[in-house]
Image (cartoon, rainbow, N blue to C red; front, side, top):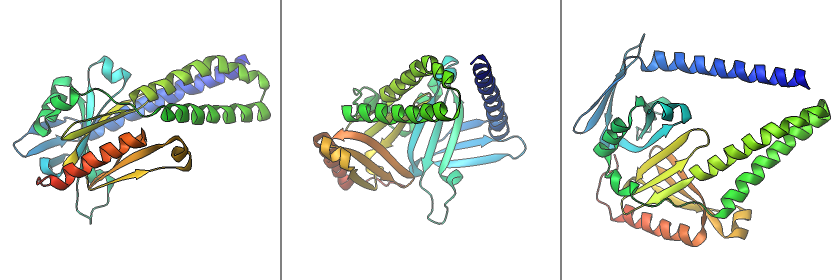
Length: 268
């Protein structure tokens, strides 16, 4: 048992160090000497060590942004912003649609959001959470995954390894609860904010008039519980609000559809 624990611990430490070094090198090479300029109708981003890259990001083409952080970044007070933009149908490369600004302080994040949205109005809204069906589903699928893993361990290795559940189960339960708590949405007259994540935290901001298609999607099990997923399609991809009560989903569906149909703003 002690040998197994030492092996697993050593492997985790090795993978953590490897991931940290790999991430550091990648960020250093790609985002070296990063500078971003806010202009009247665009963002200008310059970065790169060996290959200098300059990007002009038109505000009108930005479909949505995602502000992301994690416990380590939060400790030192930084986030990164992901921009998703509309591109020509001839361009299918993911890198052409997704642009990041890393290492942003809170005031810099607020500057970006202020230049794009009236974000303070949406931030003042209360968080709304999915139906309890979502909580039950997350716990069920994750615990089922854990059972399958440990049944396989019991069959093919020493049963004493099951004692590791005493350590794994509280950590696993904590992470699942974090995932549930981070899944929320905010909606007002002009925007929707969707939150998700487990270890990392992601907040996605989308103006309603940029929605190109909206639909409700139900599984057989969701139909029994009278819940549904709300899927918003934009020119840069999909945003899903999962497991809403059917009545709430219909209310949001009609509101967003009305805003799309009555808006005269250009989406790109």
